[in-house]
Image (cartoon, rainbow, N blue to C red; front, side, top):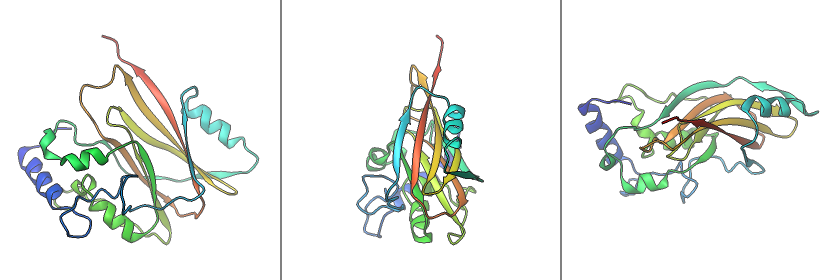
Length: 211
């Protein structure tokens, strides 16, 4: 991702200014390590890592279950390998350390506003011309997938509804060897609100890079 100098300066200002409660602390509410998270606790949900099946195989297997209801329509909000090529000192060390592979569900306007103001995602704002949209949380909810910094990209491929839970199938592209620079890959989608636990299945998709 190439960005002009003025945009890098603006991003730096935004990141320096974002905090949790106005007390000068960096807003890392998207992180599972956050003491004040901006996402649903997803009680009853789970995360499974799959290394020996493709995304299509996982989806077909899930859809063959007796309690399968249907596939939900998902709307892409933004998918990126964020901040590639930005000098390391543009982001605070605390913000970078908070990044980790994770998946979150957002169901309230308050959490969404805090997420949009967090130290990574505040870059997507009206000032940069790429604001994250307003969401009607009476009708919709948001799912975010974040991949480890050495990943090539993450994509929420499908969200399936069952009698007692939702299953989100995520493809995580990885390379061998790993990329030379961190990428902070993420994917954000919205979908119809259904108040059930979300089970995440992360499917590793290894891409061999020949010398």
